[in-house]
Image 1 (cartoon, rainbow, N blue to C red):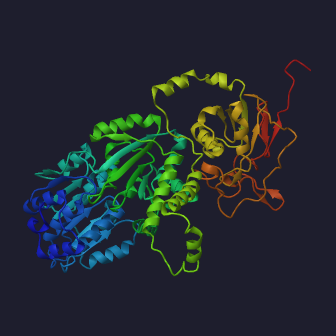
Image 2 (cartoon, rainbow, N blue to C red; image 1 turned 180 degrees about the vertical axis):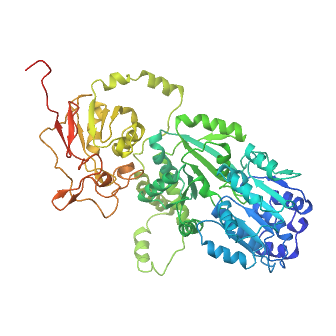
Image 3 (cartoon, one colour; image 1 turned 90 degrees about the horizontal axis):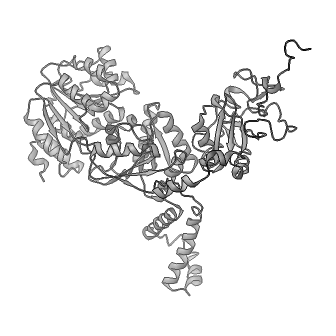
Length: 637
């Protein structure tokens, strides 16, 4: 393999690389650096994420910077703040022994006045996100008339994020005879379009196969019911004590919900998404790089620029819709020559997506089962033994107890001590996971046959019982979300739940007779978003009516909870997709102020958690359900 000395770099840059510990170039650096140094043409470089693209364009870029010129000589455009910060930091390290070379990062979320001040002091390399750079151009705070080289990093993602018009406007302010270097992990139609539109006499440099993932990544998937995804995620984490992962969700809201649920269940996690301020993002990333966080929950966009070499797993809690997004996600692991795992937690309907990804990425996805209780317990014990093996014994701290320990245990041989210790440690750990059920969806033909032999839905629910619950579409529930919520609270499987009738502020749920009491009792004392959940039994399927007509609840539940959201209800009695909403009740309903109940803004109903509505012709009035008056038919007295 070649060395950096043979690539034609300046002595000052080689000295910086040596101090950074860069001994040998990566394949993309070995191929791209000489080509970029020796060509005046525009170049497209295709290489996987995590292969050293920043060094591939940053090192030859520095060779052409004239420290005596105070104007901007090079422009690097990147899609995210994190990537801008990372590139700028790398360039500063490369240029440590090049006095006068001043790269500056320009991105949203930071003080634009500070960035303007830094540029005015003579920045000759600008690393920018398109949006903030346009702001600076509009304020005439930056002049790109002297730019000799433009680098478009992660070009495919910039196009996916809708920056095409911004790129057009920015590049029109640069000289026509500049060089343009485009770096991308994938070569889709959009990237090819930008190459034709903004580049001239383009040369293409490809490292590895096109639109494939890194060979050092093992691609895995498991199949569970949608309601079990969170439980499956926690089992994989428990079964890998050394796991250090990025978990991907589809939306900013989902990342925050998932991170909150994991924290509630005792995991070291935090979320990073576009709604965080720059200070918050820096704080989260600082904790993650220091490994005080085990799990980083992120969206696709927020994860761009995360350059952490030790990531062991990328977990897709939501499978992305495009192969390019999957490639970028999975590229967060197996960096700097290491191996990694890309794990997708999917439902039955997403199995076809996995097959499409296999064909598109020309790689194989291995099916894995969600770990069971025995697997998790064994993994925990093995991790405990590794920790025991490597622990530093503080004999001074143990001086008072060691003589007693020797006296008590000296009668046992080494083998007997190991057996007794393992028995204690294993029993303690395995007990925590002993009763875990199997979350895997059995897709074998035998399972389909068994399901076909089961009684039909009509037969199972013909004698079923129906539960009223004071949650409905106004609370954001549809049939899928209500099914997941009921199963999460009660611990039952979804096939014991039948038809669901969802109204605006209440719902009816059919439940198999053998499981009705389990579901019904599970909701005693439950809360949803800071409001008490009320359940009752209807008189029969589709008939309505409470189980206890005399036991009418009070008009309101007391004062609203202002001390913070009550997250009871959800996975394991309070977790995923829980949380309070504006204190006592939906939009202020269900609270009390002095001797008068709060008046809810929801259709005049002051107590959303009152007695169940009756299907036999009841109407809402001032928080209660009262019978409609009966009028005689026309022509009859």
